[in-house]
Image (cartoon, rainbow, N blue to C red; front, top):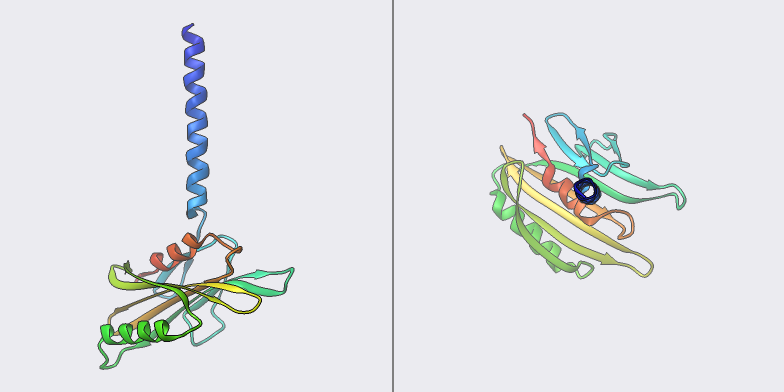
Length: 173
């Protein structure tokens, strides 16, 4: 009797552990990390980083080889603030995004990015044949305004992965 009870408990524990592992994997723990010059960012495992565009710190994208198109992309840009207050620039960007009639379901939330107070904007754009999900984070540190923009087709990736990518951006210098 004791052996049967022990086996049932062990079996239930194994099932529970398996469910937890599957859940954690689905939550983005399989993200890769890109190490740039002075920063890191996590991104979906099968995406590829490129630094060929000199206007961006890095572009990380996923190509749909069947359609010969990009169906997911993350870009990071840094811009000197000069004498402009960061809050004013961030507020102006939000106002511009809200005013764009193509941006649907617009949401804004306060987040922490690289230890700094920032903002995460969430919105969709739908054209005649395609819907694109956008997530954009912005924060300032050391006189530089950082903008991390992610866009993906809804079927391409788990939306929490691109939000987690933005929130994972960390300055290392």
